[in-house]
Image 1 (cartoon, rainbow, N blue to C red):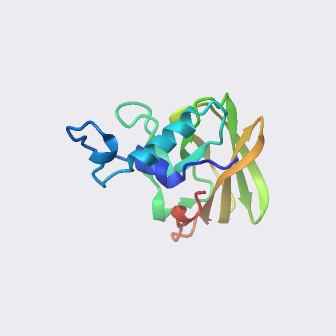
Image 2 (cartoon, rainbow, N blue to C red; image 1 turned 90 degrees about the horizontal axis):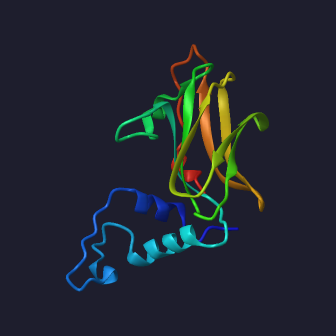
Length: 187
């Protein structure tokens, strides 16, 4: 089942934006142009509140050194690794932000770690309905080179691919490492 909202629409609503409402009280006439339109937000609400369980939407992901465990940034990435990348045999976190429709019962995300086209590891993360669901998995990959992390939703409807995260792991002796452009790969 394809979501009726795009990852860009979910990202827009979850990002910080301001919208002022005119005295008329009409949200559609008060749209300031800086955030999603009222129609886009209504589509998101309808998808989230749908009685039929739906597919989660992968909104964002990051490779992080750690995760905030308390405070205002709780459950968010703490120090994104970014372009400096990850060295082999070094711990890091795959941080994910999703919108999981409200009536989606408890299910699982599967993170499938592939190296040169071969699955080397699979991690399972529980998920349930939430407008802004954040989760993460600690990783330590031992082989330098190109990896792909496939994000899958395992539900009663089967297994659906939510996105692919390309990742380059450097040899511990190398200083040139990068996280591939993530914007091209989120579906």
